Image (cartoon, rainbow, N blue to C red; front, side, top):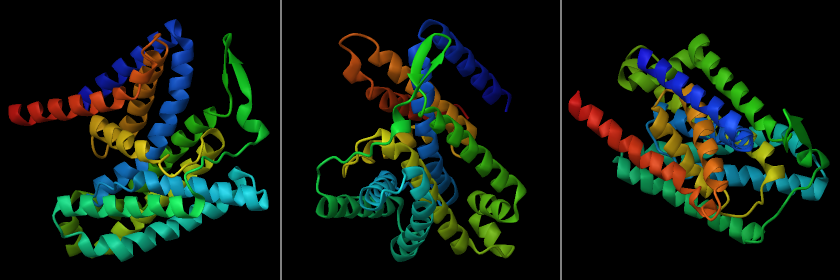
Length: 304
C-alpha cells in the first residue's frame, strides 16, 4: 500500500513538472489520458472479475460511435442526448453477446477465449464495413470546437468533459464495488468465484452483469468521443490494446491507478509529438510501457 502511494506521488510530481515546462503537453495529455482511462476501466472490470481479456472491447466503442452518428444523421439527435438511448442499448447488447457467445466458453482454455473474442471483433468490424462502408463519418456540433484559456495556454474546452466523466465513472465504480450489496458480491466473485458460489452468490449472473455494465460504460465514452473523432470500422481497435496496456501497468483491481496511468502515458505521448520529426513515434509509448510492465512484474514474481 505504501509503495503504491509513493508511486502515485512520484507520478503527480512528474505531471506538475511537465505542466510547468510543457503546459500544452500537460493539458492535452490530461484530456486524452482521461479518455484512455475512461475506456480502459470497463476492460479492466471484465478482466478482473470475469478473468477474460475482451479483444472486442474497441469494437463495442466503435458500435456506440456508429449508433451515435446514425441518430445524429437521421434524426438530428445531439450525441449528449442520444447517449440516453445508446447506453441502455449497449447494456442489452453486451448481455446478449455474453449469453450467446461468452458464457458457454468460460471454462475453455484462456487461448480459446482470446480467439473467441477476437472472432467477435472480426465479425463486428466486417458488419460495420457492410452497413456503413469504410468511409469515415463525422459529427459536427458547435460546442465541440470551443476553447478555454488557462494561465495563458489556450486548449480545447470540450475535451475536459473526458476528465470530468472519467472521474465520475471511477468514483461511481469504487462506490458501487465497496458500498452496495451487488458490488460487494461482484468483488467477491472476482476474488474467489468458487467461494462466492458456495455462499449463495449467482456467479453466472454476476459475470453477465459485469460484461453488460462494461459495454454500457464504453457506450458512455463513445458518446463523448463521437464529436471529436472520425468514425470508421477500425477506430476502436487501438483503444483495446491501449486499455490492456493501462491495466497491465496499473495492475488488476487498481482502478484509480488505471486512470492515472492513462494520464501519464498520454502526457508522454504529447511530449513525443512535440519533438520535431518524432511525431509518429508517439503511438509506441503505450506498447513500450506494456513490455516494460510485464518484464518488471515477471522479475518481481521470481524475487518473491
